[in-house]
Amino acid sequence: MRQEPQLSVNRAQFTSSERFDRLVAVVGYEERASTAYRSLTNSVRDVTAFDYQNSGILSYDSNRDIFASAWSTSNPIELMHQLQSDYTNDRNKATVAPSAVMAGGVRWLIDISCMDRDILGSIVRFAADNFKDTDVLRFVYSPAAFSEDMQGDVDNPRVNRPVQGLEGWPADPSQELHAIVGLGFERTLALAAVETLEPGKALYFHPQGFDRRYDAEFEMINRGLFISEFDSMRSYSLSEPLSLYRMLENYTSALAHRVRIVFVPLGPKVFALASMLVAVQYPSTCSVWRVSPGPERRPTQRRALGPLIAVDVRVGVPDN
Image (tube, rainbow, N blue to C red; front, side, top):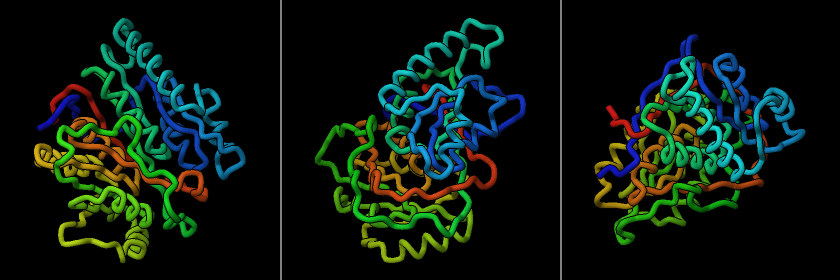
């Protein structure tokens, strides 16, 4: 059974006439951290950013210059306070100004490409709690080009806990636990999460079809992944986040009255986004788990490849 808040998630297409009240992004060390901003700067009125303060690392300094005019902070709590203020101001402008970006509603862009999962989870939680049915959030993702230098598997995790804001509060803690695991190149992290959670069943989702070199690397890293007779493996297309969201939502909706579900969103951020959009609607069934090497991760360069991938989300609107 679906619980509040209800979301409507739809495929998004960019047009030259579109305008947005705000871009919410991060200032990171990957070159693609500024791709959405550089592509859409003429369509965005204001920018709010979380600054990872990676001075001197890869493309951070050039990204910091690009985001020089944005309001930014390196404190996650301060960021959320600022977003509350931003939303109130943007909402007031939208409801009183005849020339507003969208009369009666707010339009925000959220660039998830380089966001960590706590920041992304906090933004999803904030939107679900505050946005109105006349508002639109467009989540955008800049896929990375394949690189021989990209980071593969990592050592033991330093972060192994629920995502802030999406901890979930099960109505019946005795129900069987299912883990839905997004796979990437961090096989050790996936195994650590499953060993910690000890689910009765695990479903593994892996991206496929975006670049055959990624497919081959994924196969090599995850070849020895233990899958029991109770588990299963499914694939999803990185360029079709709406289809992924519907797969996860359908599974959750069908079993919400019988099991507890923990999402483990490793791999591309589109899996994290889809997981969080489902979990926020089923707080007594779902939680989202974060597994990460923390500051131990070696910085690697990721450059954008191809067009932005995007979905539109509205709060309080029945899904089609």
